[in-house]
Length: 286
Image 1 (cartoon, rainbow, N blue to C red):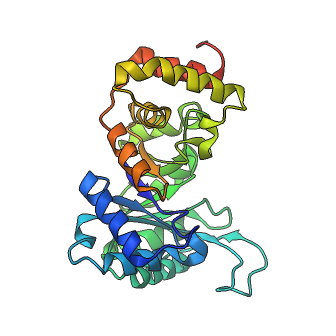
Image 2 (image 1 turned 180 degrees about the vertical axis):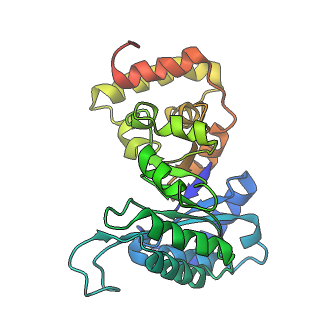
């Protein structure tokens, strides 16, 4: 499992508090830290760098994943009037150089193109990624929110195939198991990362029929899974897929990080996996 930092700066937080959270993740074995250039209004990478610097050796206990390719209007970039994608080699290299400085590190374990850029050729994007790997600034490259055909096109130009595709996947957003995305992961032998694994909290919405069905199913399954909560069962449901998805846990609450980590110990039977699938969809299998 990975720890996500998208909303890390949504509430006022000190470097010391972030440091404690990162040390907890490392102690729990949740050593992959997922971030992005645009997170926190372009502020999360720097916040992580400041927090990691407080504990000697902490950086070496973690694997940093960051992303670039989305550029937003912001006080930092007053000339932008519209959000846009840019995955040109020059832009990707510049974003990584900035990330290294903000994160106070000499390497990034995994760098992802955040969204497909329809105006950049795969030759151009791949040239930047290949250069970053050759220069030792990143250990490996991957993508986020790419379709199977977009990954295959990029892979045809990369020196090393993409290491992952970070996709939206949850009990309420099952597209990757239906659109070929997870099939490609198995064919290419890489593990996908998963964002919004709890559907932005919608799985807990008791005002919706799906939320009501999932609550009932989780209550049925809890006893046979050590009292596991719906949250933990939802993570286990994701990780049970044979492509080996890695959920990105996005919470600022320590107790939820601890609960999420325990979900990695759960093992769902085929019956229980499909019980949750039926609850989420509202109908039986075809």
